[in-house]
Image 1 (tube, chains in turn purple, blue):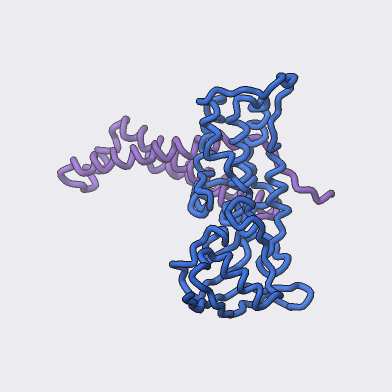
Image 2 (cartoon, rainbow over the protein chains, first blue to last red):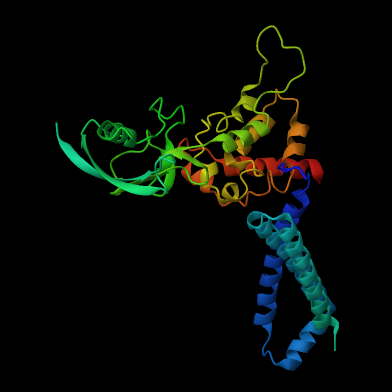
Length: 115
Length: 236
């Protein structure tokens, strides 16, 4: 194969925007959670489970996790694109990151909706 | 005339003679008329004419004498001797191949600059006199057209160090925005298409090293932000 530098995939704006938007979403959620937790008189197991039985908080937490995963994907992919210059290795690592993040997604769902 | 001595530590490398680069300690007598680092370097060169560096206009317009001065990129001709910590450590611009001593190979840098088509694209027949712009439209080009392509910014940018062949770099992107912002240019969309790329534009992580070092006090990060803003505006 010819060794030419190829560049020009013509994408990237969406990922960059996703990174910005999810950052804001996570910041809002964190402030919200600090407020919610500070308002609890006690934080024992019963209070904690009761809190997360509220559908609104569950949905907000799910959105937070989704934001976290998307943010992590863009960020880690950026690091790999910066430092890993062998295409095969980069592709392998990126695929690995996607699989790990997908596993985390399943785990998050299990935590939120599991027994 | 009062004279004083200044200590320098200079990066030396002559690929024909030296196995690897080394730092040379050298002392130079400067007098009160020597104000800028370049003045001292000219004296240095008179003492030891084997030291190689680029210089031309000696007033911050040509951009030839960009180098790494005490760890920070800058132009020797604009750097005041007063206040420089001694020994003054002079190294070539980081991230580019060294040809000799403080002279680097700028090929990659100019390749990226040329890739953004740094010229006005306008297919209309030129009018009898110049293509006019309103003063407000012209205002947007301030802080963009002043770039002298000294490469201080791009060679202080880690993203450019890691991907100099793919990332346009702050200097190139500042110039890209200079033509995107120009109301006389008709290739805005093509220019944005070309830049909408994970490597060419989005290797910039806004760490602002470029702003920190620019000897002309320009702001490539702001220009890059405006390119991203235009991309958002035409997309969402």
